[in-house]
Amino acid sequence: MPTLPNPSTHAHHWRIDPDIVFLNHGSYGACPLPVLEAQRRYRDRMERELVRFFMLDVEGMLDTARDALAAFVGCDAEGIAFLPNVTQAVATVIDNLELNPGDEILVNDHEYSACISTFGRAAKRAGANVVRATIPFPTKSSDDIYNAVMNAVTDRTRIVLLSHITSPTALVFPVDRLVVALRAKGIEVLLDGAHAPGQIDLDVRATNAHYYAANLHKWPCCPKGSAFLWVHPERREGFEPLALSARAHLDRPDRDRFRCLFDYIGTDDYTRFLAVPDALEFMGSLEGSWDALRARNHALALQGRTIICDALGCEPATPDDLVGSMATIVVPGVGLASGGTSPGGYEDPLQERLVEDHKIQVPVWSLPSQGRRLLRISAQAYNTAEQYEYLARALKQELSRE
Ligand SMILES: Cc1ncc(COP(=O)(O)O)c(C=O)c1O
Image 1: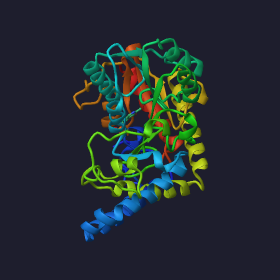
Image 2: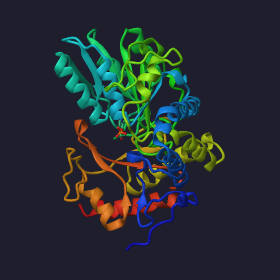
Image 3: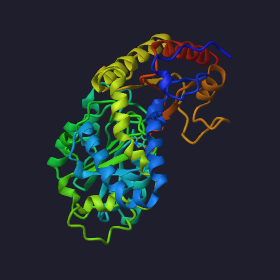
């Protein structure tokens, strides 16, 4: 067993295996113990009197959670639908679109595969087409992103899917600027903010996107299966979930229809949403404020990137202003096609060697459209600079053997 670097003094709040250097907060988040404990208390309340909980209590409790979330992400609570994850939030938006034959859906080569697949299926059914813009990586400035997207727009473009922060390349997209330009052409915008809340100071309403989907189980460290979709007031009328609630037929003068439709989509464990305010409060307390936590994580992501780039003798792939709390480094070698090519099921055998031989969990994957082999680091409250130094040494050793 190699001698591992220490995580930060905050690490005891998490259940993360001490025998792993965990540098992949980005993929699934990680829920701190006090938040799991809060969720357990909501579960206890649910299980003590299930009928009362589901019929009388949960609605008001969800309202309270939604108010706290709205304040955190900067939008009106009325437009927020709690959903289990961004995959389903994006599918919900697509299901509400009326696509026509010949319509174009514009994505790009940094978007998350599930979102592209769901758009592909909807396009096929409607006789529409998915167009994929190529955004160069390494990326010199936000203009590279803006120009690549806008150059792919045609007079048939109906909707554009844009990550706020991309998954493989950890790029913060200039979404405000893009939404202005796309709206001016009458094009709808769906922002995929899976990584945005908790990494950047988010103002969902100010993006002015038609739809904003985001995960809460990643950077705000809420329980798994907590995400939201915000729908702009101009698209809210008639907007529906994928499955209709047992309350969908009710006429509720006391309650907005959007809320009735999205609040109770079948029997489920809604405690993950109820614990959202607890997670926001807990994470915000770690460094004194959310601003302080985000600033710490951003600085650590940049420091980690510098440590690795210096060790490998490569340049950072993006300017600092396109980085949040994750950073992607282009590593030597050819990026393999996705799908789990190493015996352990990881996309790249290098990731497997880092896990098995060095006890480091960090994703090594690819941008197949550009043949790049990528490594993405995350920086969360429990990480330290020593962990990236340890990763840099392991990487150097492993790459020299290839
Ligand atoms: C940019 C992006 N969009 C969507 C998703 C899907 O999130 P989920 O698995 O929670 O549905 C991810 C997951 O990592 C992502 O990185």
